[in-house]
Image (cartoon, rainbow, N blue to C red):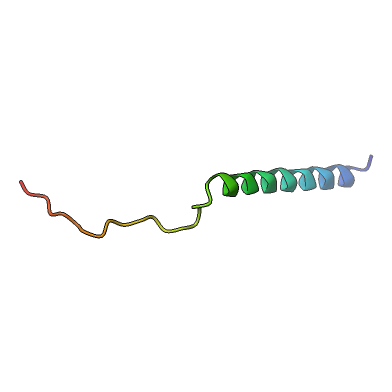
Length: 47
């Protein structure tokens, strides 16, 4: 087997694995990419 084919196959497999992991991650936690929720009222700290 040609080394170029082996490297190409490895890269294709890596893209498939990371794509699958990304898809599963988005399905489990679809909130990725959304800004975090900020509280509407800020309470002052007193000492």
